[in-house]
Image 1 (cartoon, rainbow, N blue to C red):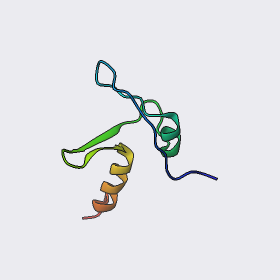
Image 2 (tube, rainbow, N blue to C red):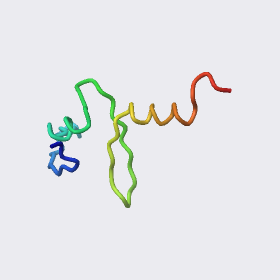
Image 3 (tube, rainbow, N blue to C red):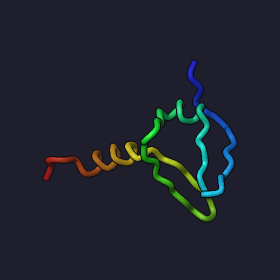
Image 4 (cartoon, one colour):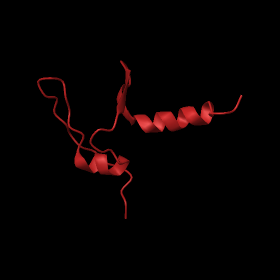
Length: 67
């Protein structure tokens, strides 16, 4: 059975880099070379979103070829 929740800890390295835990990468199909969008809100925190999810949403809002 596939889990739909995961909690993990990442440390921030000297260059500000973090490692996304393997369990989280597997859950969202994140692979080496994928682009991640960083969404920030000072009060609510930081969210990471795979770029292709935003691209899919954009295509639904602004379909190609429709005028």
